[in-house]
Image 1: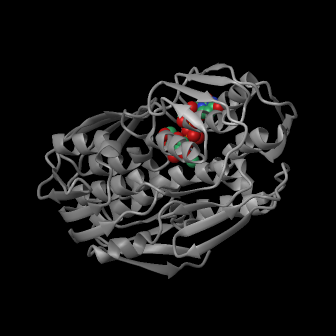
Image 2: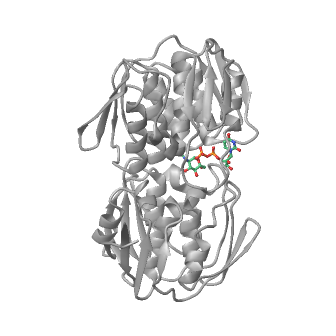
Image 3: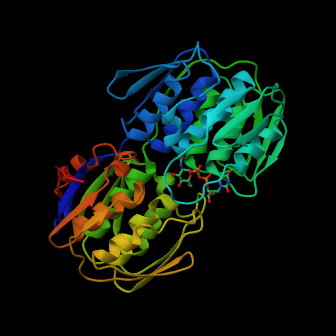
Amino acid sequence: MEAYKIRGGKKLKGEVVIQGSKNGCLPLIAASLLTDEPVYIKNVPKILDIITLLEAIKSIGSKVKFIDDDTIQIENSNINYNINSDEAKKIRGSITLVGALLARFGKVIAPLPGGCHIGTRPINLHLKGFNALGAEVQVEGQTIDGKGKKLKGDKVYFDYPSVGATENTMIAATLAEGETIIENAAQEPEIVELADFLNSMGAKIKGAGTRTIRIEGVKKLHGTSHILSPDRVEAGTFMIATAVCGGDVVVKPVIFDDNVPLISKLRELGVDLRIENGKSVRVISKKRCKAFEIRTMPFPGFPTDLQSQMVVLASVSDGVSLITETVFENRFMIIPELKKMGAKIKIEGNTLFVEGVEKLYGEEVNAPDLRAGASLVIAGLYAENITTVNKIYHIERGYYNFDKKIKALGGDIWREEIKE
Ligand code: UD1
């Protein structure tokens, strides 16, 4: 199995090009199932989660190919509604296939989705969305079983603005009869990107990015071509890495509004962040950051996907930071690993008390999940001596060429085969 080896202590310097958005891409792949015409998605990173979802749709008859390095063509003229694929079990994003197949066929059989073990990750809100549209969807054992009826638009209220459930309901409602109104919808940038994509296929969606989304069902959707937005989590990861290690890094392209919660927080802590040409963020970090407080929240609150990176920043900042996780209940798996490296962290319920230290020390650590894994790499870039990060397949599910990009910024990182 491969591991990253990192010799810490180097400042980061240069320019990093951000990949297309992982969480933006997954629902678009699902939405492509709504039409039998070809769909093109550009700026697609060849990361494991995306490849896995593409394998899952191939198993129901989708024809998928990369027509150049980062453009996929998906053609779904001859697909069925029974996903019987191990790939779909591996990732959380496969749940959005359910909404698409229900919309297209009125029925679906699919395995329960997988993904990072950062919480129990129930699908009750997804089911609420489908059932409100008149589908009869049940979970039997490890299988999602949706029985056939023509979907009908209705009102759906979410007790919590779930990103996945909002996406799934939007996708399902595009071909339903009449109007669907989603109340307390998620407002994440990925929702807006999905609405833009669906509208370019002929859907009629209004209000994406606000708490109320209205979808007027249409009879048929057609093919489209779409350029994926930059990955806000990858961009944020490199901004935080620069704040931790010190240096001068241009992160591009970045959609400023998508990263506002992080950019404003880093500025508060003393990091010099400059927006250049409206498209890049130059991060200049010369001194130790001040301690801080954050609380993860649905967008536009502070993103949970950048929480563990901020734990690393807190670990080396000046003073005691408070970090509260409100979105997922099991997102502190990085803590024992970071403590091995010398971090001083206490957990009380869903809050971390992080006492900043001046030094971290290289250790052998395990990536517990995707974002925590990337955060351990950041810790390794700061730490004295050599850090080994095992289980990097977690990291590579979401970051394309992570080690190469870090190396290009001057980080001393390499891959090594480790005997199990
Ligand atoms: C998506 C992102 C993930 C991000 C998260 C929150 C993808 C593939 N993943 O995950 O990277 O961290 O948004 O921004 O896009 N919940 C329920 N019932 C449901 C669905 C969700 O209780 O039916 C709960 C979850 O357990 C969690 C919270 O709602 O506590 C947020 O989950 P949700 O917004 O659905 O996240 P995902 O779509 O799974």
